[in-house]
Image 1: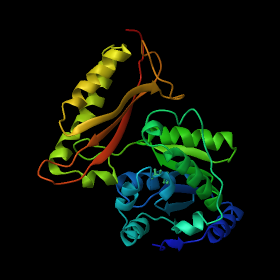
Image 2: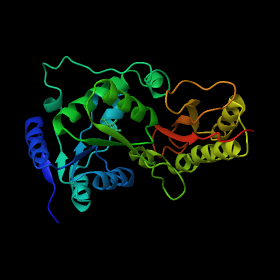
Image 3: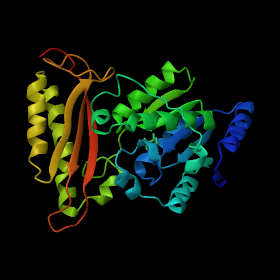
Image 4: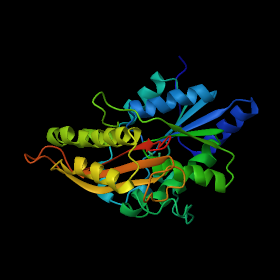
Length: 297
Ligand code: PAF
């Protein structure tokens, strides 16, 4: 198996991209902040299906953390990430340092309006500006034909699709399905920071999503009743605090009201406290499910 090529500068990555493009090869970019898990690896697998050359970026972007402590605690194990890249046939790992992407002179930001209002945009001020700015830099560095992001960050995916379209990047943005642990919890590098009691309680998230999906399948269309049911389930976890529980139009992300008539995303964000015995730490988890109100009720 060819070994993964580690590139640390934008200039080198652009040169490699131009070379690959010159040979008629299709490039897929999988942007990550490292701490790779099965969720990321499923995106790499998808990348291999749609392109000839797979680039994974490993960069913990300081500009998208509204809480500096969250940034400091973000797990980083480059050698483990590179070993996983190697094992999964990644062609190029892009590992810039902060000064490479944000030189002291940098004064430009990329911002997407409307879609970034509410949900994670409301609870994490500045977060999406950091994401859209870094992804723009990664797009210019890797010059991919296609970029792949996880559907767990549903709002992020919608924002990046809009950005790619509005700014005519000529890059197809693809979403990869959420990968779950065997008990249903969506994979996240943050799961490991939950104490055992909080980890058990975190299953309320998938229970709530399942109940809402089943209710819609059985004909429930009342948005408030659905939200109340979901809130009651997640509210039963005494270590959880609701950041948001919302139903939004799956495409425009506008809030649903009244009756559920169109495909809608049920989006949840919860904070879990450390366990009462001190195990684990405070962790914010997000998850979502697209609900399809097919047929009449
Ligand atoms: O989803 C992530 O891991 C990050 O937000 C991304 C897209 C890699 C940008 O830093």
